[in-house]
Amino acid sequence: MKTPISIAFIFFVALLSPLSYASQCSGGGAQPGWVDNPETITADHFWAAGVSEDPDAALSERIATAKQNALKNLSEMIEVSVKNSLVLEQASRTSGGTELTDSSLSSITKTSTNASLRNIESIATWEDKDTCDLWLQVRVSKKHIEEGKREGLAKTLFDALNDHLKTLQDESLSLNNRMTAVDAAIDVLPRIA
Image 1 (cartoon, rainbow, N blue to C red):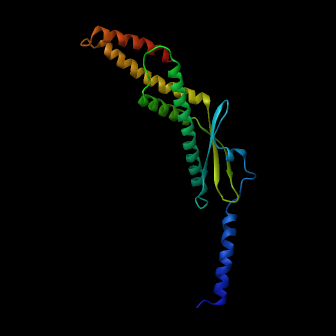
Image 2: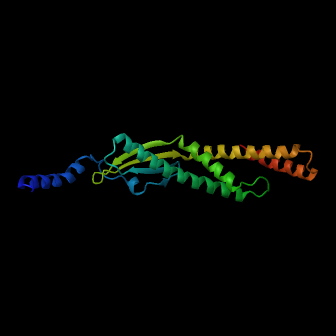
Image 3: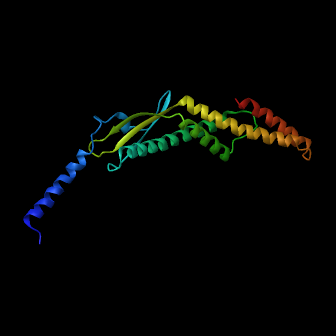
């Protein structure tokens, strides 16, 4: 049988539990606008944010989780942007030549995203005093994204150029096939820049 003292103690501990949870969070002041609008593209940068929702984890783990989530969000933004720009670029080409396949688009996009993520900057953190969620904001410059896209595109185009050169050198193929490979190789050269 529980004594009145043990019941009072349990009641007291139950009352303090929410208070002790709330006291773990220092809070980061007023909520910044980027928490409500975590993914943004400006004239110079792609911005994203990530959150860690585990108040019991060590601070370093919470920061690492928030950063990982921010990088995931940022990489998704970059992938969509790069793929869309490559599709538009290809659609605007008036001449024939090397077309980008779904596989090569994916490869370029992945190369571009990886190259871009090497250049991210962590900008700000904020802790929600009510939930103890830790937010982290990151950004990457559009210049780095464009450089990554060009790096991926150049790799793909070099591979295509090599394929055209192999076709050109294959004496078992008809002259017409070999000349088509020459035309395709000539089309690729100016795009590798």
